[in-house]
Length: 111
Image (cartoon, rainbow, N blue to C red; front, top):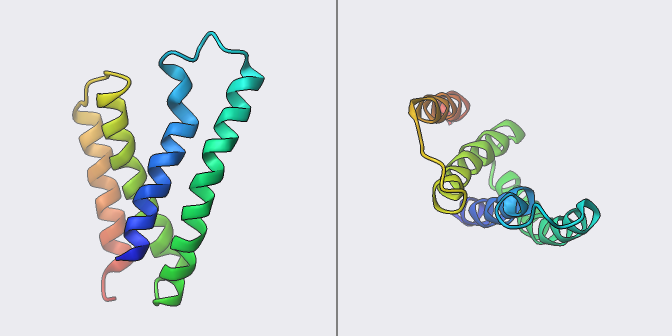
C-alpha cells in the first residue's frame, strides 16, 4: 500500500509539473516555466524513488512498478484534465484506460 500511495502522490506532482502552465502560464517565459516545473518535479522524484524502492523490496517486478505507475498516471491526468484544464473525457480516454488496466492485469496475473 505505501507503494501505491507514494505513486499516486508522485503522479500528482508530475502532472502539475508537466501541465500547470497550460492554464494561466502560457504568457510566462519558457525558461521560467521550465525552472518552476523542475522544482515541482523534484518533489515528484522524492516520492517516486522511494515508491519504487519499497515496491521492489516487497517483491514487485520492474514491469509491475511501471505498469502500476502508468495506470495511476492516466487516472491522475484524467482528473487534472477535467478539473483544471476543463476538457471533457471521451470514449477514447475510457478505451486507453481499459487497455492500461488490461496491461496491469497481465503484469500482475499469477502473482
